[in-house]
Every structure is written in structure tokens, then in C-alpha cells.
Amino acid sequence: MKNNKSQYFTVKRIIDIALSSIFLLIAIPFFIIIPFLIKIDSQGKVFIIQKRIGFKGKEFYIYKFRTMKKYVDLYKISPTNNFDSRITKFGRFLRRTSLDEIPQLYNVLKGEMSLVGPRPEMPFIVLKYSNNEKKRLSVKPGLTGLWQIKARKDIPLYKNLDYDFEYINNQSVLFDLKILLKTIPALIKGKN
Image (tube, rainbow, N blue to C red):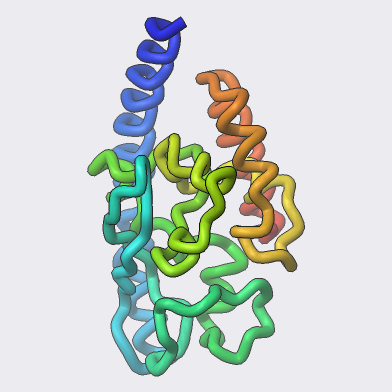
């Protein structure tokens, strides 16, 4: 059983490195165009670098294109819809299409994240985790997961834990690939 788990994590890491490398190459034009449009739309930095909690409670810094106004505190509960006044005009588009998440492919390449897994949370939220909620930290956080393709988006991520537990309890290469494939139509529809 342990050997199967070990094989799964090895294959998962190989897939993460291969696909994130390919996606980063494909995304090169986005790294040119998106910063330009962010600067035209609003004042502030192009990227945000935010502390998150990952595998086994380890802190790391997540990279994103900035979607919110310059003055916004990075460590508040994230918006649950695109009508939040903190979001810039272009930021609404980036969030709807999830293009703001592209820089996290670098986090995947570094091994801090995986392509599939629970979304990484901010430290102030993890500090309030119950023992049950801490199970989310037993796997690497991901760019996408069941929450992104199945859950209600009007409820904050930290309240949609059942999807994370379903993923954690049923991890496999096939399940990961299925989630990745289902993410594509969700992105096209702007399901976030």
C-alpha cells in the first residue's frame, strides 16, 4: 500500500513538472500582455506575492497577477463574487477566466504546489482550523481541484471542505487527470 502511494506521488510530481513547464511556455504571451493591461487599468504592482500555508503546514509564497485595487489588504477574506468593490475592472476579467492564477505554475514547478489539490489558504484562516480541517494540509495544495469544478462559488473556499476531503480520500493519477480535464470547460465558461 505504501509503495502504491509512493508511486502515485512520484508520477504526480512528474506530471506536475512536465505540464507546468509546457503551460509556462504557452503562457509567455500572457506574461507580456497581462502586466501591460493591469498597469493601464489601475495603479499598483503587477504581481502580488502572498504568504500561504501548504503541505504539512509549511509556509510559502504564492504568486498571482493583481486583480484588486492598490490599497486592498492582501490578508483579508477573498471576494466570493466579481461584484466586490475591491476588484479592478480588468481584475474582474482575470478572476472570471482564472488568468490571475497563471504565475502559480511557478509554484508548481518549485514543488510548493501541485496542479491538483486543495487550494492553499492564508495563515490567519489555517490558525483557526479544527483538527478535521487540518487534513487539508496532508497533501500539496493545488492550482485546481474538486472545489473549482463542483462547488458553490458564493461560499468561501474554507467552508467548502467536503470537496477537499473527497479528493484527499480518493487520490489517484486518473482522478487528477479527470479533474484537470474538467477544469478546462469550467475555465472556458468562466466558472472560476
